[in-house]
Amino acid sequence: MIVTIDGPAGSGKSSTAREVARRLGFRHLDSGAFYRALTYAALAAGIPPERWPELSAADLDAFQVHATLAERGYRLLVGDTDVSDRIRSPEVNANVSRIARIPAVRGWLLERLRDAARGTDLVADGRDLGTVVFPDADLKIFLVADPTERARRRLAEQGVTTPSAGELAAEVERLTLRDRIDSEREIAPLTKPADAVVLDTTTLDFDEQVERVVALVRARQRGARD
Ligand code: DC
Image (tube, rainbow, N blue to C red; front, side, top):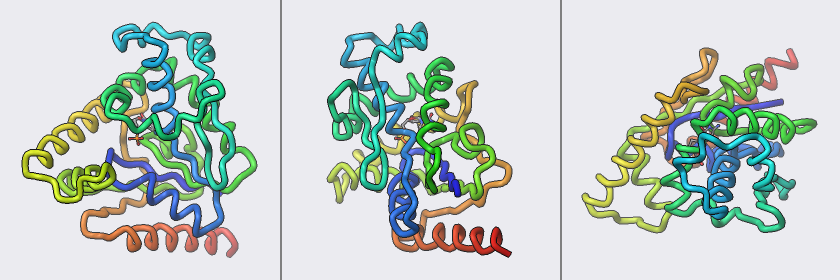
């Protein structure tokens, strides 16, 4: 069974997908981590972002970005180095949208994301998982949340639990900019799949949000059995 969870930055996709997968015994695929690992590799190779649109499939191969199975998900490596911790840096945050809008990058990753899904029950999260990567997914969820709430969650993830008004406003601005780049790009933009269930998480706490998704998956599994 494949469950996709798409939505804008900070809507809680990855943390929700991870916990839903854990409760159901599925594997979790965080597709954003793949874009982040490529961004990290391109920056580490010293290639300036202006030149990223020229990257060919062979250049992308040469970065040696790959995923290995981790306990319930995937671990991202560049060569032999586990980059799971390095792909959440401010530098990667600031540049990942630029790599994600390059057609050659998306084509290259499409195969790898589909390969990763073979032979396992999966909860996959990202921006185009229900529209492009797994258009035949068994259940598609689209998470939305108010931008201020999303900014608050993003800051809390970074350890800023009581942000000042200025910090919050700056984070809202960063998220809104990233949403705009992700939604307006020509290739695989962030859009709600026509057959997705929309879940607004603004007023839900984490456990409620996870429970809602788990309930939807179980209902779908029952439906498939009947
Ligand atoms: O979910 P995230 O913040 O880790 O995603 C990082 C970036 O990757 C984000 O700017 C959008 C992009 N992305 C994408 O374009 N398509 C996906 N399926 C997943 C992420």
